Image 1 (cartoon, protein in one colour):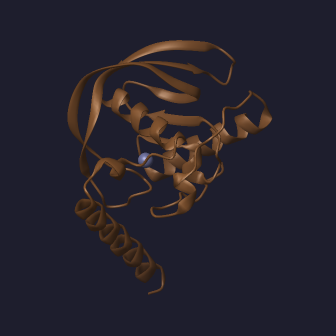
Image 2 (cartoon, helix red, strand yellow):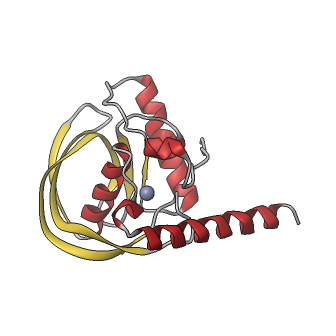
Length: 168
Ligand SMILES: [Zn+2]
């Protein structure tokens, strides 16, 4: 089991775009690390750039879908909604973000199988959030400057809280 540190906003690595990958041992290791790190963190999704690896790999873990998506591409997006959203790179933050409730995604499994799948509700929201990470797009990018500065303060406060806890 390999738990990797999750980069936190405003780490500049989160703003970089990720590259498409070919299947191989390094992707197998990466998928395992994403799976393990997500399990320990208790989130519903994690992208490779959040653990500092700029490859187009995400891992989703919710009731409706659990597994890896390699080189995911969203082919269709429908039914815009505003939904509360969180992110493991933004501890303690929840903001309403516009997402599509119905999507179609193309992706590859570790086995090499190519899949086209339709998602509705939570998994659709999570896939959009994680694919954004692969393009260096963060959930707060659509918020106003004032809201973004509030989010930054909250993340710093949570980080400081964890630091104080570890040092007491
Ligand atoms: Zn995120």
